[in-house]
Image (cartoon, rainbow, N blue to C red; front, side, top):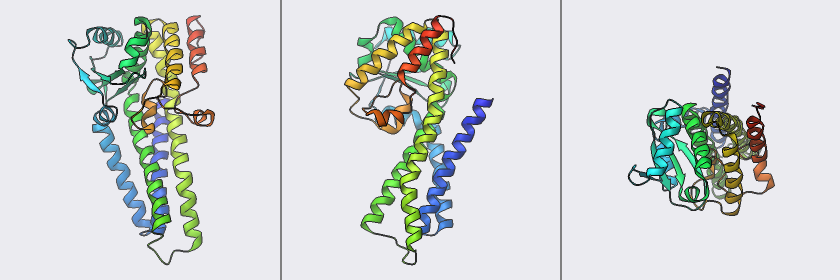
Length: 292
């Protein structure tokens, strides 16, 4: 219950950032009160869209194709084993057409879930390693993390988009409110810079704790922490060498490892915990030491 309350609080904070950004933009463009209600309405609308259509949006953005059991019998067999061990209904299965090895889950609840893997992960991992990855993703389904992270990604992406939109309009067209003073414009510009950073930090706080939880419950489900640790190590190296060439960085939190390239500074603000710590915790779990 405590974890759910913390997550709810983070969502309230993310929505609050979105609304405050609306007040900042509204102060310059069309009135503060109008801006607040406009952005509050947009936040509600985006949450509704994310709830009902997040799976289709994510699958479309990564060109994922739903496959039948006849098309991918081995993959279906492992997914079915893991979902039965987790007492969950069988999700839909999709394959992403890229050689970058990775996996993610999406959908609003266990009855409307999709587990997706890339073509690259099927050829890179052993069966035990792939089972560990799929157990991690199914754990996200069981914990309803996929809905939480999809909504967080939608709001964070919207805040970043609005910040860019506002910045370009300020540079090209200036304020439509000719009575706005320099202080108001300065506040708006500061908000334009800080709002996306604040949204990223909130998204990071939501995502990192849930990755640790999915590692733990996935490893416990199959009883092979070292198989998942080995898979994470391989995937991290492969994704740094060959990041995915399409999709949106706003949805990186859905993947088991970050599929996009980034330097040391970018990795500090990654939605994923440090891979070394994830592997160390799994290795400790294999020795009977619970560091979660």
